[in-house]
Length: 163
Image 1: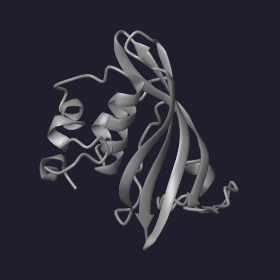
Image 2: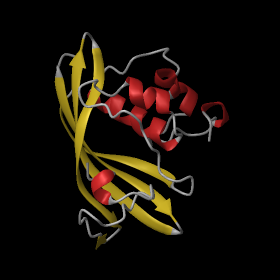
Image 3: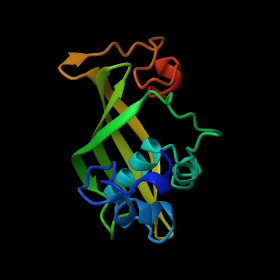
Image 4: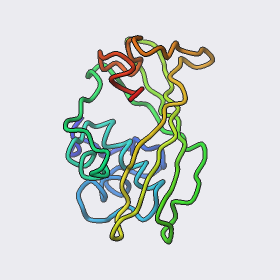
């Protein structure tokens, strides 16, 4: 789905329409003022496969050389913010724990991650994240290093969400 096609509710689950929510960050009209705002905008960028925004908001010390989005069969359904530590306008660091719900091959999954952010020269950047779990609701998924990643990328867990 392209950004131009999104005229409905924003994928970040804010309750706002995309153009008034994450669309203003993706277009460059506004910059995220908190770590949570950047988390929501990055989730939405991931859901709509906006590589440019995803790369631009990734700290250059941890940014991968390239980004592979999950297969097109992956449908990102909603984002749930679990906890925030710091990451407000006057902070220089922040942590956001979230759950991202998605569907793949008619099965539901939830990715639980703790993400770290840092603010440099007035801009928030994603530093890195630690995946706590990838599971079907109420069922733990094997997170062994050589297990196929449940996000649908087609890669092994250790080369994808387990990085």
